[in-house]
Image (tube, rainbow, N blue to C red; front, side, top):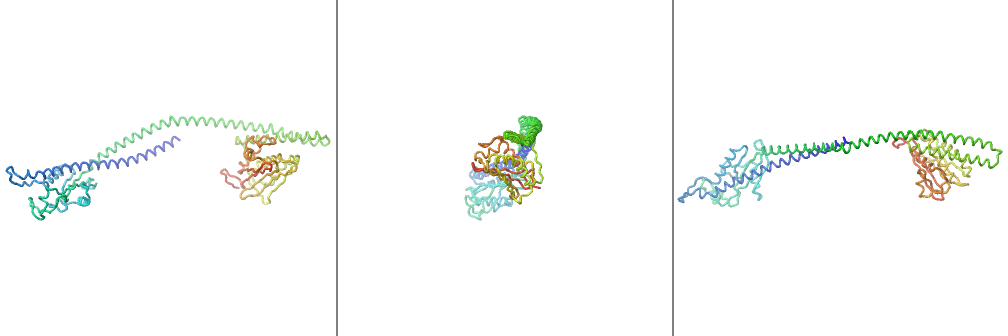
Length: 480
């Protein structure tokens, strides 16, 4: 049990570790992308601020102190691109550039990602576009930010279209709010991914340490609260089993002694009573009645002793049955012969109702005879002069039914379950040990069958024993 529990715990922890590993890697991957996106936004804000500052400072840059106009060729596009080139050239893997649909310079030609970004800006109000891609053989975050036409842009890009601006380039005739292009930024993810991997490794090490700690605590707790009590319980159970085996041995010895010490004298008394009865041919009626009474009581006492010993054997699981091919006619005849004298004394007739196609079955004839003797004895005891007790045998599918039906006083419905219990008798009983029906039920169970009772008060009783046509195997299947 502890080992099985440990295996289950390890399996659960392994599954949890796998789930945590997958979740941690996914979360750290998102963390790296989020940090790169934050950096891209900050970098975009910085260079946009420089772009806007140069744009807003054109008046100061291009006018001399005497108020004369002197174009210095320092404008927002030149400043922005110069800053972008400095960032690109002085950083490891970072790229910053400006792109547009109709570039004035081939260096501003957009690639596939940048064209997708410009299309996105044209279709939505969203001013940024980003994705994780492979760029130059490494994983990077591609980020694009919208550049819109402002009033200061119209001097170079406004109306009239086709006229040269101060830089010598042709104006495009754009209006305020039109898409001027996009700022394109490439952020390498390697550094962030390494940081995320270190974080994931630390998390996994912590999880592994926590798991090991939990396992150690659980193992110690299991040993203290489960294994030791279980070992003690097993030891107690083994001791109890040894004591029970010894008690069964003592009980078996006692039963063997009882069988010899009680059955032998009673059998001797009955045998001597038979001799005494033969020698009473010329004796008076009173002596003959005395002999008959001794014989009857001795047989009743022997029957009670037999039932008591059989019940004790069954309780100790010492009663064995031996299956053999059995002719039920022989069993019925043997049982009837054992109760005929009692039936004749009470003026009760015993009739046989045996079907012609009654089969031979696999059963223990001695055990079955005990059952029939108990049922017949009860039926005779509860019948009166002129009543008939019928013992029947008939096939029933894959089984055979033996019945004992009397015309006696019957058994009340409330007593019909009690009569099969040890030392329990129906009201109005005729004495006895209260073990006959209990022994009969247990014997029938050992033979692989069942016993049923149908009765109504004042209308007699019918006991039916149903047995399989073949020997019952240990799993309850019938076979030859």
